[in-house]
Structure formats: structure tokens, C-alpha cells
Amino acid sequence: MANFPFHVQNLRHISQIDKIINESFLLKPWGGESFPDPVEDLFARIGKNIRKYRKARGMTQEQLAEAAELSAYFVGSIERGQATVSVRSLDQVARALRVSLKDLFAFTEELSREELLKEVLEYVRSASSEELRAVLTVCRLMRRPNQARV
Image 1 (cartoon, rainbow, N blue to C red):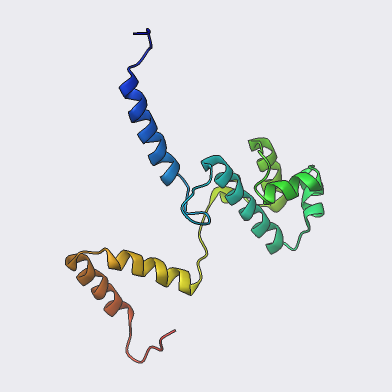
Image 2 (image 1 turned 120 degrees about the horizontal axis):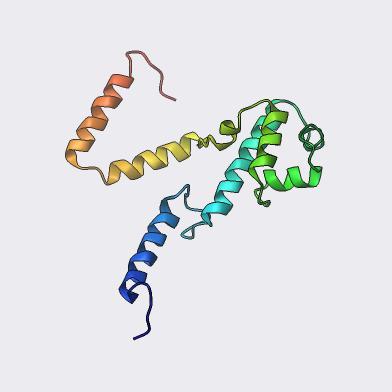
């Protein structure tokens, strides 16, 4: 047997750990069963946040690029999640947008009512009786008399 620094069986464990990480780290289903690369998904989420802040400030990509001392092409690539971007460049963008660098990493999912309902139903379908009682209690506490349904 070759002199490896670890046993072949450890490879199986490493592969299982890698699968768990890839399926849980910053990921959600992307067009079906497949999952994107964690780093690519991270850059896509950062880019989405940059676009959100830029539009909220009424800036064009060109204006942001000029303020951040980057090219407009690079800013567009960052927003589309197609660029590997350094922390220095992200800091320049954050300063130009007048947000903290931390804000670019604040990921919140803005789901539609239908998407929210679908996700809640998925959880409820697999809930135990005890969990369903707890959910019902919360729902009853949330509903006030004469409150209109959305």
C-alpha cells in the first residue's frame, strides 16, 4: 500500500463533508436539483446587494464606477456575480455607496407571498403534531379580531 498521509476511508468522509457544506453553505436550489458553487453564489448575492444599494441611491453603473474608481464594465460584472472581486474593490464600492462593507454581505431573501406560503406549507407538511400545535398557537396569536386576510 502506498504511503499516504491518510487512509482511503477518510476520503469517503471528506467527500461526505464536502457534499454537506456545498448543500448548506449560503445555498438554495438554483433551477431545480443542482446547487451552484458556494463562491459563485456568494459573489452573485454580493452583486445583487450592490445593485440594490446603487439603485436606491439613483446611481448608474457608470456613476458608481467613477465614484469607486473602477471600470463600469467591472461594476456590471460584479453586479451580475460574474467577477471575482477583492475585498479592496468591495470596500471601494461600499464607500462609493456610503454603506458599510458588512452591508454588502447582509443577505435577505425577498420572497413573494406565494413563495412564502409555499415554504411554510413545506415545513407544515413534515411537522409533528406537537409542532403543528405550536404553529397553530402562533397563528391564532397573530390574527386579531376583524383583521382582514391578505
